[in-house]
Every structure is written in structure tokens, then in C-alpha cells.
Image 1 (spheres, rainbow, N blue to C red):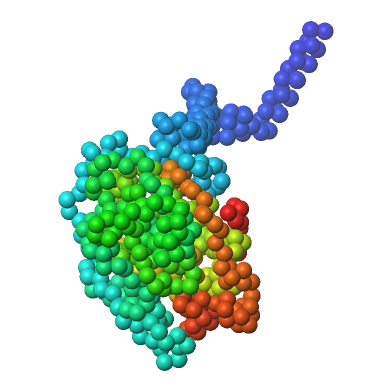
Image 2 (image 1 turned 180 degrees about the vertical axis):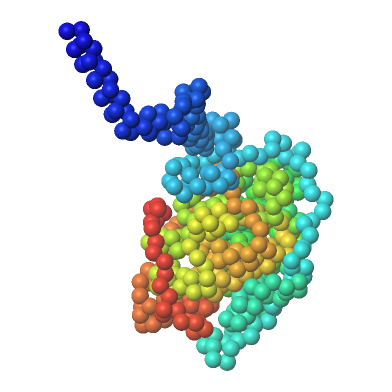
Length: 500
């Protein structure tokens, strides 16, 4: 029995050995794919180390993403906070803020604190003017060249600018001569008393009221230093002057100058345009032509009450950042084609003429605004303009005014185009809209303005009724354009806000 049991056990072991010998590499394979048959002593440690490193990288990446998300959320919160300390931490000029704003993640506040200095008396005024690097000498066309085929024989305030002259004006040279309003016989004449007064004005706060739509609003929070340093000049027409005499107190000094509070009234006789809004662009855009001795100027629309000291404004928007031109960003629009669409919806001018205006710009290479552009926006809020009157700034203002003279009076449509044409030669600071709204108190117009041309929907209406068309402005829209505008298809507009 015992012998049989031993034989049975021995045969089983032999069979197991035979099966093992049939696949001699199995043992090696069981050890591992990368093993020759022997397992290293540190093999388990390597496996643990590799798995731990992968987990560490994953956890680190997740924590890093959470940290970025928290920082972005804090940035959004601080930019919308009403607490001065937190809102001061928000850099509204940064690319991060612009990206968040473009994505619609930032709700724009209507007003926000302005980081101005505390004391106007401590502001150090620069002793030297900014040097003219690109344009060193700028002259102006003063006599009009009326084309032989023109139905308008009398001189125009802005001149009969040909398409060739317009194109040449964008080519920068050291010495330039361009159209810039004030053509002889074109209107907008100043009284000799006013001409004499403004010659002494080096620092100017300028405003304008036309066709009696507003009354002057007295600035507040003005320091004694600024009252002595600045000339507060209110440009008016005959209608507005008469309206002020009937509704406010207009005083006259010994030299014949007229005053309403701090504002020195400057009368422009013989208005150059039929449209009051277009007349208002004269003191607004080509301020340097009215007040040629001015080194610095701040333009503010007539319906506004300035509530920040002008010396603090110059320090904040020009001198602190070494800027020479500052204007606010539009609250709703960055794209001129979207702004044009909003103008049509608000009936700010004839719809087909706005379309024609935009077709010219699109044909000439003006692309819709995108985050790839160097500028924060192509559309300004033009009610406040802050500038040092350098040669290149004066050139920009002339070219901007020429666009308003040739096309629609909606200057917000032309600003970005002229900046695009001048390129890097014209540098400007576009500050946040919420700061713009903190510079003034807005008052309503005394009455609503409406012109017949604003209600025109089809070009046929202008052809059938010539009384709808302006006789001295916007004539570029009725002059044959040297290009095929019929083939131009304007870019699609995504309406990101209400019309206004």
C-alpha cells in the first residue's frame, strides 16, 4: 500500500514538472514584462514612486487651476465692488479685465471712484511741452477750391475736400498742410473782443451750446488755483445767447465780454452748417483752431456739470501716465459697425447715409473691433476730451473733423477710423467708462432735438425731397466715390446691448 501511494505522489510531481518544462518562459513572464526572470529588490518602491508622482502632478494641476479660478473670481468681485479699497485694486486697463469684459463676465458699473490726487495745490505742472516727433509743423488750408461741377458755389467751412486730398492727408510727413475748418467765407466768425480774450488762455475748459438746447451749468469742486489757471469758455450761437438772456443771468464786463457765472461766453456768428449737432463739432473737435494759444484743453458737453477739479483731471489722465490725449471708452460698444447700427435704431441720422458711411470705411480696410486689436475699443464716449495740443494731436483733430464734415455728424463713428489710419503715430489713453460718469452730473436738454434728415429710411426720399438733405455738410456722401461700394457687404452685427 505504501509503495503504491509513493508511486502515485511521484507521478503527480513528475506531471507538474513536465507541464512547467513545456513553457520555460512563463515564470519569467509572470515576474514582469521588463524582467529577465529575477525581481529587483526595489521594484515595489519604483511602482509606488511612479504612481505617487502621477497623482502629485494631477493634484498640483487641479490646485493650480482652482487658484487661477479664485483669482479671476476675486478680480471680478473687486472690479464690481462699491468699496473704494477693493475697486482701486481692479486694473480696468489690463488684458484680463478686457477678456472678462468681452466674455460678459464683468458687469460694468455706472460710476466708480477716480484715482485722482487729493490736493490740486500740490499738483506739479510740467514745465516742458511734449516734443513733436512725427509731425513737426502743421499748417491749415484757408481758401476753398470750389469744383467746376459743384452745385455749391460759395465756400464751405470745411472746404470742398476731394477724395485725393482726403487720402493725402493721412500720409504722415514732417511738414503737413491739411483742411481743418475755418475756410475764409465759410462762417463761424468770432467777435474781436473774444479773439483778444482767448489769446491769454493756456489752460482751457471748453464747452458749447447751440440752438438753445441747454443752459450753462456751473462747475463744482473747483479749487482757487484752477479758477486762476483755467479759462472756462462756453461757445454759443446767436440763438443760444438769446435763450440764456431770457432764462439766466448774462453779465457783461467793461471790455464787452459776456459771462454766465464762471463761464466766459464766446459767440460764433454765421453758423457753418444747417444741422445744430454738426455745428457743435466745431468747438468740440477742433478746439485748437478756436483757441490756438491753448496748451491743454478739456472739452465737456454743454449738458454736463463738471464736478472734478480740472487740474486733477489733467494730472490723472495725462501727466501721470505721460499721455497727451485721453478719451473715455463707450459704455456699450467697441465696434463702430455696432455703434452705427445703434445710431440707426435711435434715429440719429438718415439710415441709408449711415450705411454708406460705414461702407466707405469697410472698403478702406476698417475691420470690426476684436481683442486682437491694439486699442481697447474703436468707439469712444466723446462728451469729454482731454488733451495736450501737440502737432500730431492737432492733426488727428483736423482729420477727425474732416470726416464729420464729409460724412455723418456722428463723431463716434469717425474717431476709430482716423485712429486706425494714423496707426502708432497717434497714441491715446482710453479710460474706463465708469470713471467718465464720475466726472460730471448729467442734466437734461431744455428740449428734444430732431431734424427731418434723421427720419429718412430710403435714399429715394432724399432724391424726391431735396429739403431733407443738408446743404453744407455731409456732401462726401453725395460725391461719387472712387471705388465699387455696391460690392461691399457690411459685417454682421451681434447686438450686445440696447440701442440707448
